[in-house]
Image (cartoon, rainbow, N blue to C red; front, side, top):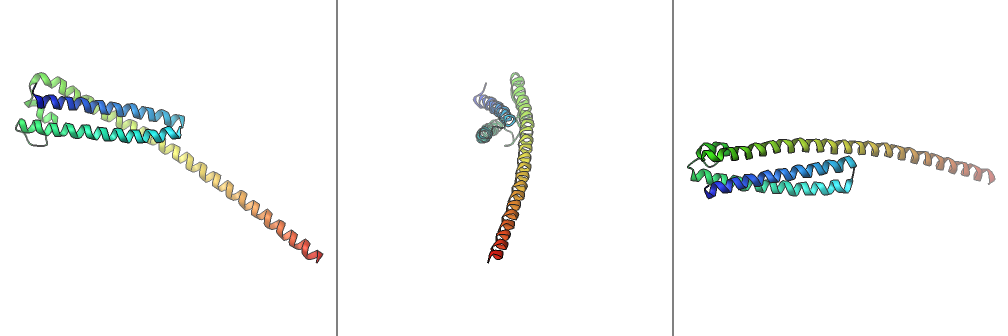
Length: 165
């Protein structure tokens, strides 16, 4: 195997691994969401962002190596890996095709998990907002009742004071 091709294959493996790690983190976040563990949810958001950066790095590295391989093979600078497949020795096709397929499948699963977690977060936020609205209206009602009682007591004191004087 040629070194540039080896590097592209290794970069594909790394990208696959990074998406797998993201999927595991999203599963952990979903568990935190169902347990309603606020601190763990916040921690998971930071961890997911770090993993997003790792995925971006792995993808950028693979794209750079892919462009270098394309240049060596005499192809345009931005071909897809599938565009390069016919130029690569046939015995590498199953490996490269499997890596591409697995990466694409993981991307789709990760996208679904992100949407599911987003829905859970949104639902939690809606419930919290509803609770805040309810508690705020109850608190306002209680404060108004307290003010009415206070001003009623003051006016009774003024009336009693006026009657004494």
